[in-house]
Length: 260
Image (cartoon, rainbow, N blue to C red; front, side, top):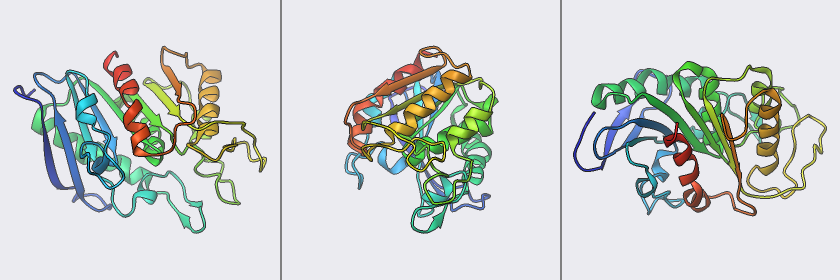
C-alpha cells in the first residue's frame, strides 16, 4: 500500500476491453496504508467542487485509511446503471451487467496492480448510482463487504406502464441474506401508496425515492437483515434529490463502512 500525503490520481481510458465506452477513473489515495476501498459511481461529481451538478467534496469526508475510487459516468449512464429496460417516455436501460463486469474485470484489477486492493471492499452511489451499487452486490456477493444506496432509484423496472417484475426491491426480496452490509438512505417524504397496484410503493411527494427506499428497508428486514448490524437506514426529512444533499450526508455511509 502507498504511503505519503493523501492525494488524488486519475487514470484515463479505463475499460478498453469492455463493450461499454472507456472512461476516467479517479482515485483518492489516503495517507499511509489503506484499509478500505470504496468504488463509487458518477465519479465526475465526487471530488471537484466546481462539478456541473456540484461536488461531494468527498476528499474532505474520507475517513483515515479509506481509498475512494470514482468511476466516471458516460452519455450512456441511464443504460449502464440500470438492470432492466424501463419506459420513462422512451425505453432505456438494461446494461448493468456490463457495467458491473467493467468494475470487476478492469477497474478492480487496475487498483490492485497500482496500489494493492485493501481487505475491505465496498461500493456506493446515489440515485441510479445507488441502484447499480445494489446490483453489483448481487452480481458479485463474495467480492464486497459493503453496498450503499443514497436516494437509490429502487423502483426502476416499475416506472413504465409494463411492470417487469425485476425491480431491485424484488430481486433482493427473492434473494437470500447476502454476506455484505447494506446502507440505504433518502430525503423526501411520504405518504406512500402503490397507486398502480404493481407491488412497488410510489413516492407520495414525488421526491428523492423516499417510498421505494422505505419499502426496500422493510423487505430486507423481513428477509432476515438486522437493523444496525448488516442493514443501515437513514432518512433526512425533506432533503432534495441533488449533489449538495448527498454531499451533506455522505459521511454517514463512509463512517459505517469504515467501522466494518
